[in-house]
Length: 75
Image (cartoon, rainbow, N blue to C red; front, side):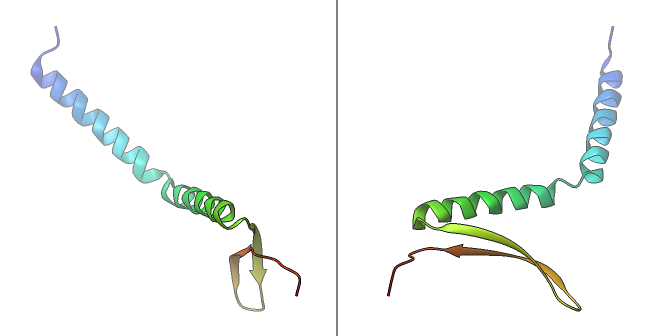
């Protein structure tokens, strides 16, 4: 039979394990990138445009850039 003390210890150990798992994983950055990607797709859809993803580099820096082109027309 499982007593209340055993239950308490089991729950504490489980929570400690989950906490270590969450702290040890890098879930926040991929989640933010996925949200941003979904927003860019929605902007493309709303504007009838097209997004282009670039990785930029110069002598001292590196960065990523998103350009959304829309409303193209002849002059």
